[in-house]
Length: 259
Ligand code: NAP
Image 1 (cartoon, rainbow, N blue to C red):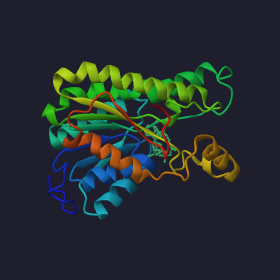
Image 2: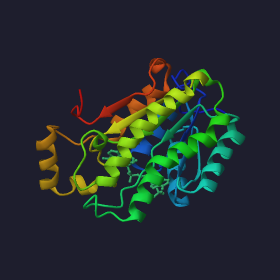
Image 3: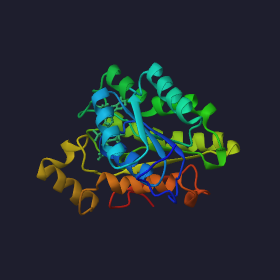
Image 4: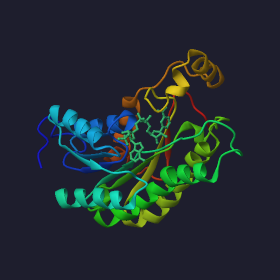
C-alpha cells in the first residue's frame, strides 16, 4: 500500500478515499489532491475509458490510485465500488460524493416527473445510498469523514435551474441530518458548495461572455473558480485540522451567499 510520489508525511497518509464522479472536473481535482496528501484514492465514473484515463494520470504522478466504473444511480455499481475499496484496503476512511446532474434549463413548474426523479435520485438519494453501503467498511472511525458536493445555488437559486437548485439545497439538509446520525460513531459529515467552477459541466454559465458577466454582476464575484480551489477545501474537511467540524457547508464561490 505505498504511494510512491506522495509526500509520506502527508496529512492523509495511508488513508483510503472513495470519490464518485472523479474522472474529470472537480472530482478529479479532489482525487488528485487527496492522493497528493498521501491517501490511496479510488476514482469512479460511468465510463470505463474515463476511469482508465484518470487512473493512468494519477499513477503517472506516482500517486496511489485505482478505479472502477460506478454510475451512482445504479445500486449494483455502488456495491462494486465499495467492495473494491474494502477488498483492496480493508476499510474506507473518506467518502466524497461529487457526481451530480442537471438535465434541465427552464421552468421549474414545467419540469417533468422524469426530470425531477433523475435529479433527486442522482444528486440526493445516491449519496445517501452510497454512504449506507460504505458505512460498515468505515473503519478507524475517528479518522473517517464524509463530504457531499452541493452548490452555491443551494443558497442563491438560479431561476432556470429549479429542480437542481432544490436538490442542492436538500444536500445541505442531508449533511446536517447525517452528521447527527453518525456523530456517535465519530464520523463527520460535511459539504462543499462551489460557485462557478470552470469545468465542462458549467460551460453554459461561462462560455457565453454575456451570461458570465451577468452572473458576475449579480453576485459580485470577479473570476471563475478552478477545480483545485474546491479540492483544497475537501482535503481540509478530510484532515484532522477539521476534527471538530461536522454538519457544516463550506462555500467556495469567490463571494459569500449567506450570513
Ligand atoms: P464535470 O467536469 O462535468 O465532471 C463530472 C464527472 O462526474 C465526470 O468524471 C463524469 O464522468 C462523472 N459523472 C457524471 N455523471 C455521473 C454519474 N451519474 N455517476 C457517476 N459519475 C458521473 O463536472 P463538475 O463541474 O466537476 O461537477 C461535479 C459536481 O460539482 C456536480 O455535483 C455539480 O453539481 C457540482 N458543482 C459544479 C459546479 C461548477 O461550476 N462546475 C458548481 C457547483 C456545483 P463520466 O462521464 O465518465 O460519468
